[in-house]
Image 1: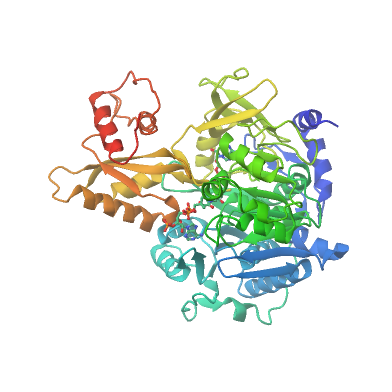
Image 2: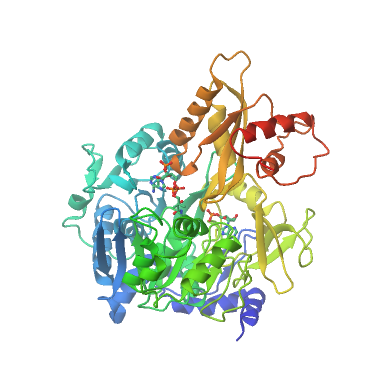
Length: 630
Ligand code: COA
Ligand code: AMP
């Protein structure tokens, strides 16, 4: 069957198509049907099946005789160590952790927050939750205590599992003070915490609340896998929206298993026993799906990499890891390749390693610029596949099905819609537009299995953010077009979300933080183009009349404030004081116009602008930071 036929069938016969795919996972009780559309436009999948994530990711491979195969390789240049864990070892350690959690009262449906760096124990914590039917929420280590507190309040975890520290090049990040600060700030308090003590920096534990991981699991009776309903939430993953309150994306259990299993062979061309490496972080959706769940569900070997593309120790790290662990498919963000390319444009490091094992490279997380793709293709001599997805979808919306039918690569496009995604480009009135015409990219409902059924504790927000703009469609928040062959081109976001080094950030959230500064009367944050990180946030600050503080001091405060409140991951280092912000006559800040000026792009003077002269002031301010060059 050709890919186009497969896709067509997934849209016209979703029940038949997904029930067939569902046979590739183990069920405690098979579902009677795939799609549950009784509450449309809220759709769910496989509701009446019973299933367990951890069983599918670990136990079933041990039962099938793959117990001695390596499941997880932890390659950590920052601690100078490599550790390998087999499927049997993973199962036993996860069962013990789950047993210890169960003994402390964690049961199906309880939430558990995980705040850990790139160590195998992070995967064990996720899988132990899955074993019990508990709902995990992993929080990225680069977020500050306040962001963790916001998530604690929303998810109301019974337990938090953390590590004593993370290791960034040149500094050890103490996680425990951040954890303590977050718990202090949050209104909800967890019953207990489990802390993995790392040699680089051991944490002081609070008597009665904190447990040392090693002591906690010692002697625990292993827990069995608890069957859950197909639509039971397996995790909540918070992602940036347009305000400071992140959106808690829910991932339902069975659809995710089915979709990831399908994707491993058909998109990533990885078979059981082969090695798949995603260089991202478990705190992001890419890490959930393709560091932890996807490779393990498919019975392959996953690499957990604790390092950076450059500087740990050099720009050859990626190639060393690929060569040493015989990686077949490699997935990273374009920004990581840009970092390597900047240090090694001619690919001198590439030549040092035998990369014959590498068959395909996958990029996602941000727009893949043609220069980066060309460079990677030239250096590595394998197909470099861009694919497009979001935290909300959990797996690729558009990709090239390399393991099913490799399609011609069109540089600048993440290729075509994956099964179950009826991707359409709509005009402002919600009408589909023809090939080559720019519009809002929307997906006709229902979304396929694996995608979000709802937001945690926020159904009204779910409907408003995604379903109401174009009734009958899911609004992706991305704009772009499709060509005559159905290839999608993603051009920009339609909201205030920016993409910094493949990390999705909210300018609205940063504005909320800046506005809390006592000297700031008004502010705006925009995303300006950056050669390495794709975009960088830049803040404009209008100070209160009569303030005596020096503008430079307020700028310095504002940078510190965002780092302390949101975290270093926001990479907020650029801000400038201006007298006024450009606005429409109705008072809307003209952020898009400021972005065009900053990036030196031509723009049309907005007809509704209140005072065009302000744009010259903005240009001068941007030039003082090295932007808005002709
Ligand atoms: N814990 C604590 N701090 C963290 C962190 C973590 N897990 N991850 C990043 N940070 C910090 C960094 O140390 C940096 O701090 P600094 O301002 O003191 O230098 C800050 O957050 C910004 O980090 P980052 O955006 O990663 O920039 P960088 O300069 O450290 O590295 C790249 C640049 C391009 C090498 C890096 O961004 C990268 O590898 N990106 C890959 C993107 C990716 O995997 N995205 C996931 C989606 S697929
Ligand atoms: P996140 O939820 O953090 O994965 O971010 C999702 C957003 O990143 C998308 O809505 C896009 O704006 C952007 N994005 C992800 N992958 C791509 C891609 N391949 N091309 C263009 N933009 C992408």
